[in-house]
Length: 206
Image (cartoon, rainbow, N blue to C red; front, side, top):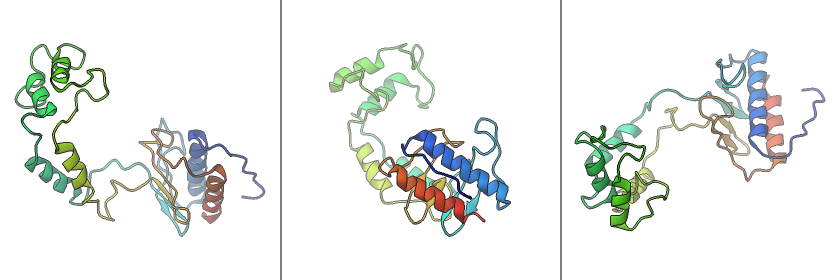
């Protein structure tokens, strides 16, 4: 690292992006691992498969769940449905064919029908409110959320693992496909803390 000065202070996407790119580049140029390549993210924009005593990094995971999480959730969803008088049930019966995937004639997502207005009026919901196609007026959504709190992916399943984790601070960073896209990180961590974390990671890569 030499006498490289770290001057970043404001915590934003640009700060996090630069840190993840720099760490990926250090991993790749050190010969420790080969950084994942792509087009939109650039040469060092996808992360690398890497782990040491200070941090771990992995590229975006494109695969499926490899534990029983998805099958357990699917079984619950098959056994539990929205009530017959729920907004969801009524809306879907009006808007979609029996298979639940194809629109009825004259219906669609582009204001081709009045389904939303009609069902919202039934339940006294503002038709312009967000989520007009997914409102739930029964206990299904609440029960589903409660059930999700009782299950988790196994430690060996890659689906819910962060793309980056610093052990000492607990800082985790996630992105979609490549670094910088739909980033998810802790805004409450200060710039100084991120810089300290970054320096420790860079110095730990041999």
